[in-house]
Length: 409
Image (tube, rainbow, N blue to C red; front, top):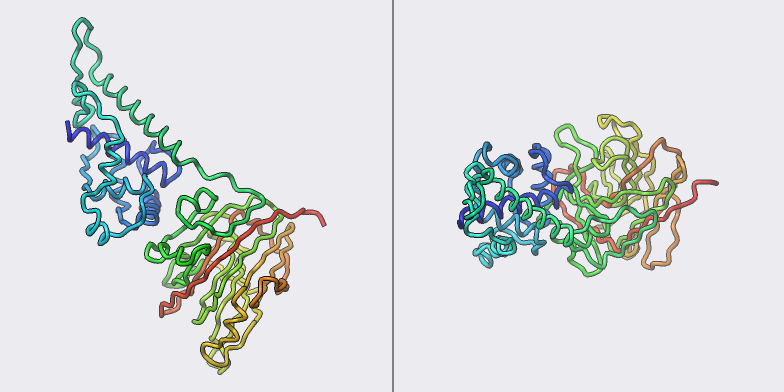
């Protein structure tokens, strides 16, 4: 009975994890991509690893326990899935081994599911289900009563999930976020989604209360000859307006190594491939061999062709400060409060920035132009490109907004 109870709980748990991590119920076996997406979601929230291939195999078994290869996930894996579903605090394997080696979340989840009556305990497989016939009643079809009980159990678990984890609200035309909370469930409830999570750095996003801290990790949204396009900890939300203004405010962001930057990224699809626009506060000390002071600049990059193999175009390169000595305190002071802004009306875009020691400094226009481009997603990012050395500089965000604008003149 204990074994059958574990199996029924595992099946309910796995279905709930798929609904939470993928956003839709498990009705077909997971593809390889589905497995990777779900594994990334589990890693981002729990700090623990479940392999994408294992998740794919679990889906095959859960959907067809009588014919699929029998799966026997470890208690550690069950605990990881339960931590994901129950929104447990993030951890890692070392901390769990030291403090939670008894795997409390799996046993908590299992205890929440009502065990079937002793006479109708879940068999090892549906094919073995032959419930006893009560006195005075004709024998029923084998397995029907157990299947009905299991269906009720799964429906109840699904209802509990929907009660605990409502879907994020639809994107609003006007939206503002001061990042009072950066907890995963709070970000999700406010319409944010994180792509390509790097657990080691994403867990450091709340280093200062009231700020979202991203880090300039290796990566880019355009590929290099030997590197795929990917931005770690890309924070994404949909755009609901055709004409809008969006801005990001930084606190003490001072890029200090080549190609380090942070800012706003607009894209036509949520995979961030094809047509894109990027506005960032950036660092540059590459001048083709010529000796010039390093600079901090506002940079605008676009890709207005859907083919991701096309090279991007730099439409704005506006130096703000020339760094004639390392650790320039005056530069740091003038980057105490910086912000970037993008306005779109039809095909016409404006790009603006502000920087200074006070919040009241006005925006200045750095570029404007017409682009055949209809963004549907906006993202907050911090990268260092594909530089050979890794320098993770914090980019602390204290405000983000989207405001719908009239599309007429």
